[in-house]
Length: 169
Image (cartoon, rainbow, N blue to C red):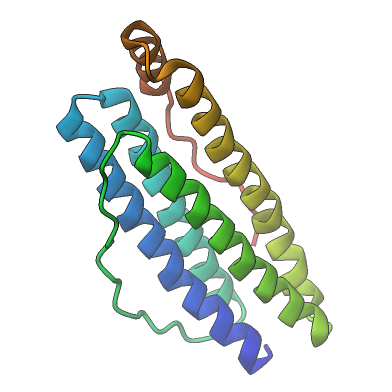
């Protein structure tokens, strides 16, 4: 495997674990507000991000590469309103999309079709992640100011269940 591609994937593993930490922080914030549905939403998001890191880790192992685990930074976001984590999540997902695209581009530059094929899944996943974050912001803007609407949205988010990704490495 190309050294740059391997390093980008290894770094991305760390970024995915950071994403899980960030979403756990969001979940804790919503728990403190009594919005258990929002907390659940981000708890599930954290599980997804952890699984993304583990998939990338396994991909490197499957290709005979060593994985170096790096320190995970503490989330540094401050929340003033219940909408803040929603906006931070969209901003973060756009950032992650850029990182995934950089891995894909580096693999393409060295004709690493195996990595490109693997990361096709992550490219698609990032499109879904951004859309989910945008949709949640739209729903919050529509219903969040009304207590009954906020309650209904919170109940909707409480129903989200975790489903492990199905990606063949």
